Image: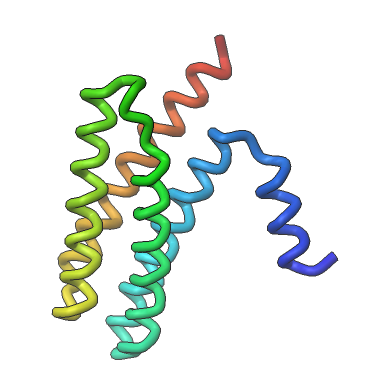
Length: 123
């Protein structure tokens, strides 16, 4: 089985909650890769990884359901917009600080979602 087939099977058999966590893991991973690329002066690699992280954050924002938990979804949307702005800033200005801020925010959101999902699963 090829890696693409494995990944496709993994995604197709995952729950919505698992997919959400995978999206966060991907965004965090691409942000970390962008940091490594920036440190090694690989500007093209930095740009590719920021673009991928940005695409995932866009997808996360598009999946927000404002009809359920509206105040919370609005707050999360604000964090996604801030994260998008920081990713763009990092790409334009080669800003390690902006990438670190994105990684921190995504990490906090990931941890919060993971704890919520685990809490619901244990009930």
